[in-house]
Structures are given as structure tokens and as C-alpha cells.
Image (cartoon, rainbow, N blue to C red; front, side, top):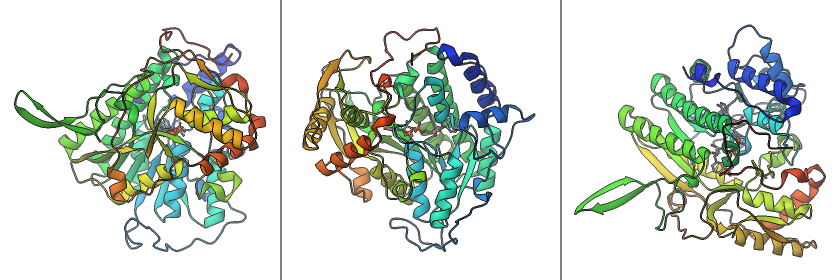
Length: 482
Ligand SMILES: NC(=O)c1ccc[n+]([C@@H]2O[C@H](COP(=O)([O-])OP(=O)(O)OC[C@H]3O[C@@H](n4cnc5c(N)ncnc54)[C@H](O)[C@@H]3O)[C@@H](O)[C@H]2O)c1
């Protein structure tokens, strides 16, 4: 059913490549699974190749490809700092492991001697092709990334290429890999993307909600002890005029008291998909005894982790465009190319933020300290909160220190959101588990700015301004990257 649903609509994009891309999209959804994909091909070419196969199916083990400079496989050193010992290796499936947070996390967990499998449909790379976008950093194919990791460390990461909305594919990955924990990053994660037009709104909710539902069914059916670590977002809560708690709030009403899920006020079809996910997960914890941790993550910044720094082929993606770029990363690129920092509206919008090095730490902590059977645990995953104006001021100061002047402009806010508001969100549970935050310091900002300067020739300045309006979303497919 999920498979049928996922094939029932198309995406239209910029006129020049309309038919081609629509077909690719359909192919990727009809034939979401894998086969051995040639590492020399681009993601788009691979999807075309997939279209020539008569039958959909299966999994890829990229690590079986020959390696020229492969290091000897190293025995587990038991270096899990926060988890089980070497005699009890944990098998962790990282869904969305080719993406920004997922790639860094997969490497980090592999480095900590977890057995890691990446599951990814590569649809994020397809979005770039559809919208004419690109990562600031050149990124290697997932196959080359994994081979490079193996050659540097001797560690194997298994690879399953396919769409988790295809339950048959997901079942095969579960039965083949037998995960103890699933970290689920594998969603369409851009609020602007979900607000481009009807088809992207439907795609986002279908992809995210059905994908997560399939993961829940796969755990129930095949791995009932498996711990689900699901990436949610702080955006699920919105900006209420009271403190934001971690998942639950105790309320006394008409003399009676109860602890209830914290109210959700999402403000895009993407954020709403996360709320729907959270509800489905909470229900299945209760009904089936699933163990789950919902990580309501703040906005992630930065690009380097210990592992991605090991080789340029391990470099992570870095989005700066108006659709996928997140606030601080976008500002650093804008400063690097001499573009004024684009503050939306009044700039008082305040959110939780964290360094990508803390994303990987938090996920590891969640895996190492699993939820109980039937428990739906919620952690707010961020380390500091900033308003957009505060971030702009920090980047301006860092830019001046490095010798380039930075200007800020206010642009009309494409979103529907409060531009000045109260914001105080709790985030103590991961600290209690041992999180040691990397706070946003001058030196980090300097290095992030220097990093963006290094790649500034790759910046397409046409992609900087916001191009998606919350109010103007309509039924008709839209071209956004003209
Ligand atoms: N980046 C942030 O600042 C941020 C903030 C809060 C929450 N999150 C959440 O963290 C998760 C990861 O975010 P990211 O920035 O790494 O996103 P990303 O787009 O870089 O990565 C997501 C990955 O999931 C894959 N994917 C998507 N749908 C899939 C499907 N149906 N089947 C298999 N693979 C699929 C994509 O191909 C991509 O590689 C998302 O769930 C996002 O909502 C991210």
C-alpha cells in the first residue's frame, strides 16, 4: 500500500528538465530499491539505470566492491565510551545515512565500533538535481564514501539503497541486517521544500509519515526489541508563550492533574509531518510495546566531525540555499561571498541550535541508553538558543575579525511565524546522559567562516534569497530555481 501510494503523483520542476526529472522521480519511486549501482555514475544516472531493470528489489552491499588501499579490518577495541562493551556489539541501522546528519552519525558510530548499515534512497541528491541546487562542498557518491571509510579504518558499513516507503524493501533490510537500534534520519527535511506547491507538500507528508510508519511495523514484525531513535524537530512545538518542556507537560485542569504530551503547533507541512510521526510513534509504544526516543532536534550548524575530516572523500554536504540551507550555515556562506545576511522580517525568531558534533554525540547517547519497552521518550536536542538577529551579529563580528565587512538586510519574511516572541525550551535530558556540548564560540565561527571562504567559488548566488512563500503555495507545480 505504501508503495502504491508513493507512486501516485509527480513533481514538476523547472521547464528545461521537466519531463526528464518527472520520469526520474517516478522511476525512483516505482523502483526504489537497489541492485549493484555503478560507482562511477552520478545519482541521476543510477536512477536511470534502475529504470531499465524489469523488476524492483533488493539491497546493495557496497562494501563488497574491491578496495585498492584497504586497511586490515581491525578488531573491536571496545572504545564505546558510553555504551556496551565489545562483547556486545550493537547493530545500528542509520536510515538517511547519506544525508547531512546521517552521514556524520554513521561514521561516528562506526568509529565507535558499532556495526553500522546505511539505508538511503538517495532522494536528497535527486532534490538537488530537480531544483538546480548543490552542496557548497563537493560530495562523493555514497559508494565511494563507504569505500574510502573502509580503506582508512578497516571498518565496514553496509549499504542498502532503497525507499523505506517500500515495505518489502524495508523488510529485507531488517531481516538481512537485524538491527538492535534504528536511527531514523530518512525524511524530506526542508520546511520550504514542503511549501513549494501541493505536490511537494503531499510528497513530504507521504514520504515522512509512511516511511516512519513502515519502520514501526518492521520493528513490530521482525525486531521487537529494537530501539527506534527518531529525529524529530524543535519546530514541532512552535513558539508558545510558556516554557517548552521535553515532550510532556503536567497540567492541572478543573482540579485534576495529568502529564500529557506537550502541545504541538507546527508551522509548515514538513513540521506537521514530524508531529504526525510523533503521534504514530507514541501510539505504537503504547499499543505494541515499541521502545522509542524522539529527538526533537534544533537547527544544526557546522560541517566537520572527527571522522569526516579524515579525508576529502568523507566530506559532508553543506547546504546554503534558500530551500535546504539552515540559518547559521547560510549566514556564513553569505558573509563569505560578500552577500548581505538575509534576516527574515524582524529577526527576533528564536530557536535552539547545535553543532553537528553534538548531533552525533546525542544520537550515540540515545542508543547507548535505550528507552524501555513501551516507553516513548522525548529529548530536546539542542545546546543553545539564539534569535536570528543574534546570529547575524555574531557572524558580522567574526567576519570583521577576519577582515571582511558584513552587512545585514531585512527581507520580507516568506514564512508565517512570530518574529518577536518568548522562547525558553528545556534541554537537560541529554546533558544528564553525558552530553558535552560544543558551544558556539568565536573560534568555531572563525573556522566555519574560513571553511565557507575555501569553497566560495562554488556558491551560486542566485540560490541565496528565499524563493518559497508560505502564503503563495498553490495547487500548481512551481518552478523555484529560475
Ligand atoms: N539539519 C537540521 O538542521 C535538522 C534540524 C532538526 C531536525 N532534523 C532532522 O534530522 C533528519 C536528518 O536531517 P538532514 O539535515 O541530515 O537531512 P538530509 O536531507 O541531508 O538527509 C536525509 C536523508 O534521508 C534520505 N531519505 C529521505 N527520504 C527517504 C526515504 N523515504 N527512504 C530512504 N531514505 C530517505 C535522503 O536521501 C537523505 O540522504 C531529518 O529527519 C530532519 O528532519 C534536521
